[in-house]
Amino acid sequence: MSAANTPEVLRPPVSKSGPIEWVKTNLTSTWYNAVLTVVMLALVIFFLRLTLSWVFFDANWDPVRSNLKLFLVGQYPDEEMWRIGVNALMVSLLMGVSWGVWRGVARTFGRVIVVGLIVIAVLPLSLDDLSLEGRIWVAANPGMIGLGFVLARAPFIRPKRVVIAWVVAFFVAILLLRGIGGVAFLPEVSTTLWGGLLLNLILAVVGIVASFPLGILLALGRRSNLPAVSWLSILFIETVRGVPLVTLLFMTQIILPLFLPEDLRIDRVTRAMLAITLFSSAYMAENVRGGLQAVPGGQVEAAKALGLNGPYVMIFIVLPQALRAVIPAIVGQFISLFKDTSLVVVVGLLDVVGIGRSIFLGNVAWIGAQREVYVFLAAIFWVFTYSMSYTSQKVEEALRVRRN
Image (cartoon, rainbow, N blue to C red; front, side, top):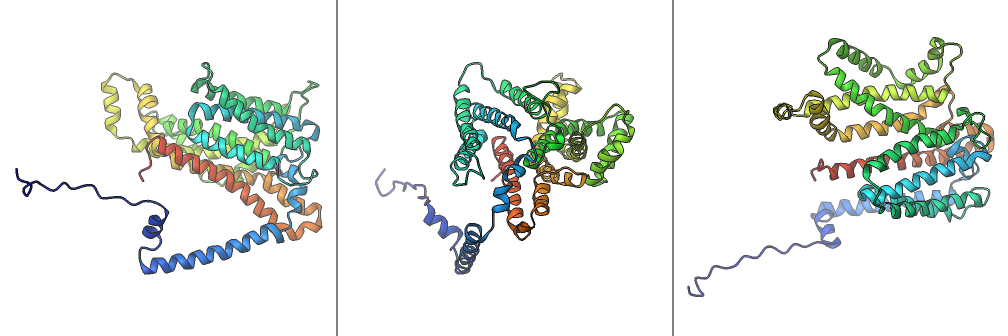
């Protein structure tokens, strides 16, 4: 074949990437996009300058610095603060082990937590704001994360055992916080002294852990072929979803004790946990039911054709696909549950928001600093809710749910 008849070899187009090309493609592709980019950039710089100037020079952060312990743990006794430190070290150790076992999201959170703890430990606050002992406890947590990461390489560490360790750690943490009556080295600390961010986290974790399986059972019960189970599930779900959370909180705090025996008394924190769990489980049931309806009927028929019975089909075939399909809705419910924990202030429990409101009653000099306190509270809730949302996105990517 002559050279003139040789077909021309077409090479793939050269792709251009980098920050300059990204700016050209996304910000200055047309003249009006360029104008909008310049205008928005000017507005961002203007408001960012005002915000940073207020945060670092004009704002009065004395109410936050002076009441940092109240914001974090409420009126928890000073002499028993070591329990919270031990719980933090235990969580840090398990976070490091999770980082070494699962990588991915755990690795990202492990790095962020290490950097955040180091910043807090060296933050230029006075000793009245953060004592030397408190700095040592904070600085020890990054070391525990590193120790957990090293331990994750041990042959006896398995993912299932790590999950079991997290569950056991939750009950150990509650036992440490509450104490044991009659034990000298671990005296009982009344839940009436629990408060601040500690109370929000406990209520949220208990609500999430308890409402998730209960919501699955309610969703399965609503789809049951047994009329009694189906109608009871429907009655519970629709009744609870038809009233606000505040109503359930008042019912568990005021009405529930009237039906209990005289010698049986349940503390207010436990009753708040019950109200939050029941409320969240009803909404969780509807989220799970939506996922169950999204599973094609052919999946069930194929599983039965392979010889699987009803429970195995539901546990190993239907539920994994249903939960995978509604991860965003489930995490959204968890985020809403965490924010709803601030409603316990209406029944006399001082969570972190209640602490923020109460400090103005104790010192009239801080009445003008309400903006600073509520900005601080908003930042706390944003950090936790964004972390949950980010985790949801990473889980979706790992399960190939998202389609970018």
